Amino acid sequence: MADDALLVRVDQDLCTGDGLCVQLAPTVFEFDVDGLAYVKDASGALLSEPGARVPVSPRCAKDVIESAEGCPGDCIFVERQDGSVVAGPGAP
Image (cartoon, rainbow, N blue to C red; front, side, top):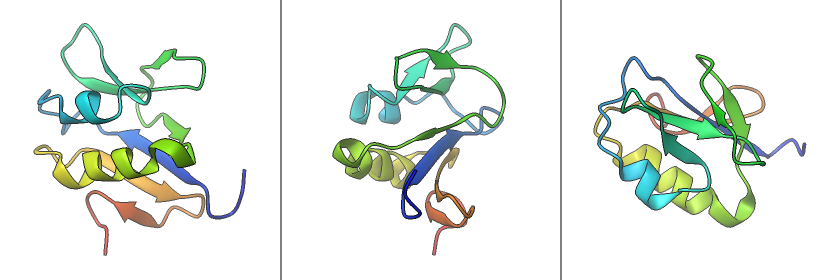
């Protein structure tokens, strides 16, 4: 993974189930049976472990960042490998 690659995670404790992320980036986010959003890996498998992070492909980075910035629950974190936040809670 390149040093500037982005990773994304969802904090389900903060998720409101609004669905903006699922609408904007359906290849990255999906609802589980609990009505909360989770990230999916490259094969499309839902990752339900707390704090699960997945790489963001360059082709959907804009949609993932927009999801984080527009999320009413402030639960989507887009980060660099070093943990610095690019979008979502704590972003500059």
